[in-house]
Image (cartoon, rainbow, N blue to C red; front, side):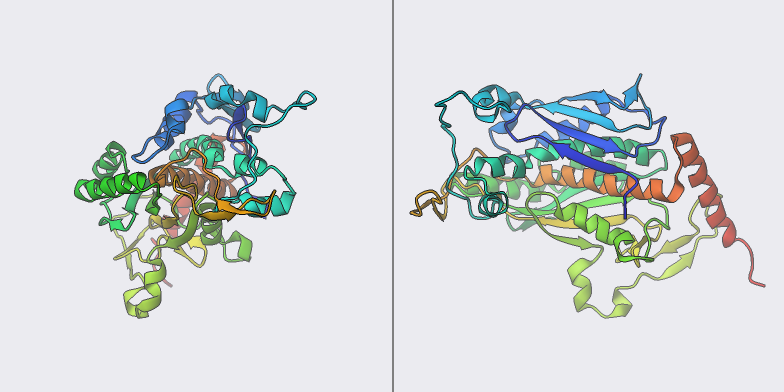
Length: 401
């Protein structure tokens, strides 16, 4: 299946820039660097981030596909410069080095848990810096930039995407209530956690890990509200929206597990406590889905199709592989046992990963919206969305017979 909106990224962690090419955005969408920069700034903050975030001040340059603040319907090119490039120009230059030049930053010792060793096997990179430069989470800058545009498109049909941290290093919090006030608390938190007592314990756990030269992972949740029923399909396996969202989440560096709705908990409960009862909403407006659920254990998806409830995703991020007190490894150049390579890194990046997950969810949902409602322009798309919602409401206004 070819998605309506497609994202291609390019660039290395310490190269001159990271680039995103976003295809499939309809013409007529308001796009501004300020909107994208706000999302980039959200990715950079978070208790437990490392020294790289003290260097970078991510700002986007829109290089194509937008004119006078409006999308043209063509591929959009977004570029974010790497300020750290100034310190790496000799190592990461695209041009061939001068004769006799020797790299001072060759990586021949892989880190357990990172792509170093597997990437060397795949691409035969003798210097594993070639692996870590692309496998680095720095690439997610491009995803967040693209996701910012997708969030703007989703807003045209009344969809919002939010994320929050649920746990770090074994410290867990109750889920924050959804709604504007709750999301304001999340945004005000340096851990994206509205439960401040729990967040204080998480910070303490991060401090302990930093002191020990260790790292921490955690769990976050992404919620999309206002998603219309009927996105996705069960007609073929690759069109199931839960599968597409799961793949998007698992593509984020460090993510090892994804749940939708109850997720793993549903496996231990009887069906009567898992399925969501259906009721008719007689007060639904002309363009509103007329059904309500007493619960949302399905996470807004049934049979690979959205059912009108919020889409709820949870993802588990493993601890960052780079440790200041490295684990055992092998120098692949000499075959000798040694300690793993250490690269400047975060202690915990769960809040940042949550922002990346919002962007990836927005990318998948915006693509599904375009697939469902079509149109070369935002005006055509929103008109089709309104007609669809009126059609759904009208189908259940009529009485049987």
